Image (tube, rainbow, N blue to C red; front, top):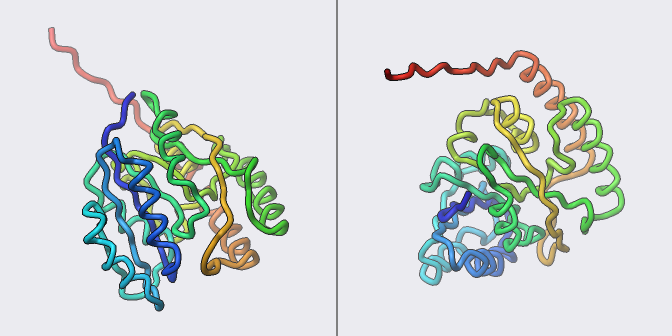
Length: 240
């Protein structure tokens, strides 16, 4: 299966030091593919928005959507997906730790029947030891509870069908459970090893403890959704 068009959605909040270099990398990585770059400014209080506006003259395919106040990463991703014009959407974090060149790896991994390809950073994680350990524990628990076939669901680098994403139940923090939600819908997923880089500018908007506590509540919520899912098998009438 060949993907010739892709919308790249990047949610950001207070990432003024990272937008220019990352947009350039995305554009270079996808220079042979029809693409658009959608930045969703999730209520930034620094110069992120002005930086983005200044880059639009250089990158014609750059679109900007702006939230009046911060609504969180899941809502920002959904805003970007709704604004996308192509059937396939790639997401990546706005801090520069995902390598845009890996979008091409995800595209190659998409075959007939696959609705989502997700990045796996385990072999190349560039975070503090506490984040790495908490991530391994969280992913192990989540994988056993949800059976989502994904070793690193927290990786922001993903490629999925726009139609499938918009058919998912929407809730805050849903971006961490996309593989499980896609599988609940009856779709198939694949995990692809990707690079993970050091953050060069700014600081993370997430804390380890608060993310863990929210994740536990959401985990049980998604498990509840899974238990009540029904995927109908449609019967097509044959013309004789």
